Length: 368
Image 1: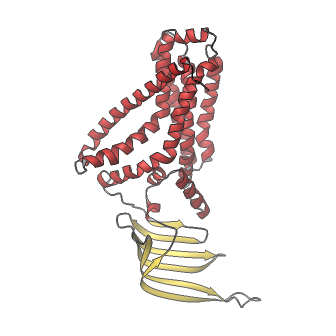
Image 2: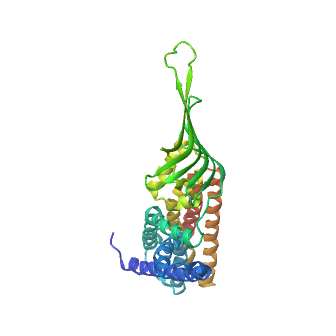
Image 3: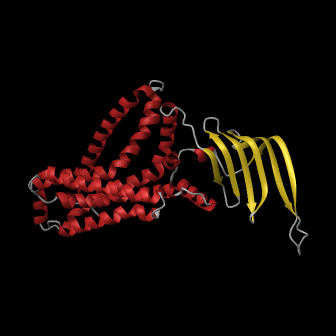
């Protein structure tokens, strides 16, 4: 499909206005962020502030606001075109409204595809550096304060711990149980376990093990079990549990790429873990959110292509009201899914379907 003069004209205005508005808001946000965190930045080097924090913070922020600013950009320059009777001249020349929308859809597609790639692959990796910087200089080494923690690692394995220290990567009062056919066949109890960063394994201290052996020769009567007890000062244990599993839920969600997030959800589902709705919402949102760029762009064109009394101001007011309601509805539906009141896939896509219907209605009733 070759781009015509009209396509190039509208695309140039669309992308130019979008980039300018994003850069402008980023500059404002960075200035406010510096003023808020200046006390924390005193201990960091200039290289860390620029490369570890802001170069990783800017893509995250720009991507988060890309559908909204694509929407604002469309309303802004299309309203100016309508005020100057350019849209009237274009549509009066025999060009259909559907053909008029083509460059807008192309521009929205470019923004949406870029946002999709950033959300799934680039930003999660950037968030790892950003969070490491924030934990070091702003959050002052985040510590997990949870106590009496229970985790199911798989269908047959459960662990318990009295407390966990993120700084030391140590679990206190640790117990590991393995159960099969409703019978406990292995238990390890220790004063604590320590993560060995070199071996990537947990080391148990002051432990004892209880191993149950069944007598397989007893076929016609109830099986008999014998117990074996072992004691020791130190032992390596190999379990599907790592210090990152004790991190903040928000941190774990933000730093996982699409393949990592899919694998994590599958693993946690197999374990029977609770609270995975937040991860499912994030996984679906990374796709649904860029798609909203198409919907908001079409709504923006249909609202602003008609010349009305009040000009850009009225168009912006109407557009921002619709955009704000979309963001609010999206947040509310996601909250329902996280709390288990709605399936995550349905909750994430409901706003797009609803506002897609509004976009279709505005398209059908737009001045042609």
